[in-house]
Image (tube, rainbow, N blue to C red; front, side, top):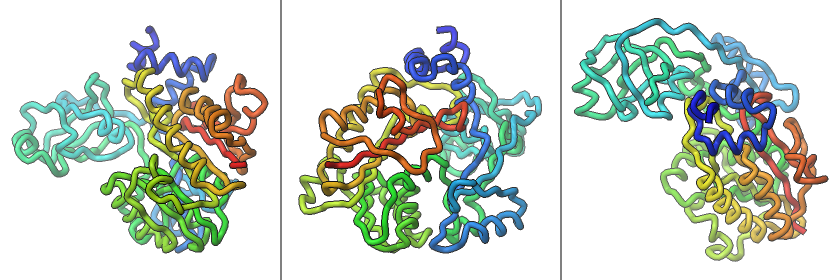
Length: 388
């Protein structure tokens, strides 16, 4: 309870973290409360070499570095924590906006929860609902405009706590030369190891980061099928597919949990299962409200997608399961379900850049891959299966 009060993490979240991180619990919590030290992006080698992209970004003033393990992974260092000016006026924003402002994002009107007697040009401190200051900015709208229109840029952030490079405004992003993507997400597609000419299914494809990486690794050959039941999410994936020039991708609006019933003839050589999860491994987190019951419910949900993958993948095919969290329920327990209930076999991963699974998983723990926030800047889990 003391840690819960100090860090504003729900007691259940502290409890599940303690089970996983044990003596490193406080380090893990404090790491989650700030962005990772490195900001990663993927060079889209369908359009440009990693070396050329690094040179282009370097000429724009971005200090860029090549990751040592695979060519397409580039990164920049995150600056901070930076000093914040002392400002008396306040504007309160929602959780997502506050965590984005910490990294330099601007504030749009729908995210504002409270502002009082503010006018255009006012300098304001931006806080979350708990009063934690995440940055300072200048009002682009006045209070009456914000309350009347509820849309548009409201606060231009001038002093964030951390400075993360903004790639989305660059010509390189618009031309599809790059895609912002965490290192573990890139590792996931590499572990899937898609081969040219194969049929690959991504059961949870939006917003399309791993989907387009798979296409890239296949050099636009074969077929990559991306599935999501939400048409708006499919539209987001389609935007990235088109921007990155992935011509071998087909998008399908469907509920992946019933894919084997709706498309009984659909079979894949490999399948990616990257389902909705608690997201506890994503940083920064100003506060956490996730409960144990929510985590258990999500784990049950994730198992439904893994079950479908075990049906649509051909015998001898590969299934990769990944989540941006670290809870036992959503990680090792889902893997155990895959082995004991679905007859899947846990297999070796390559590359293996993270740590191993929890020790009490047994001999196969070394086949699992965990990234921890205090060592890797993100909490992430990957498992690879073979269907026998």
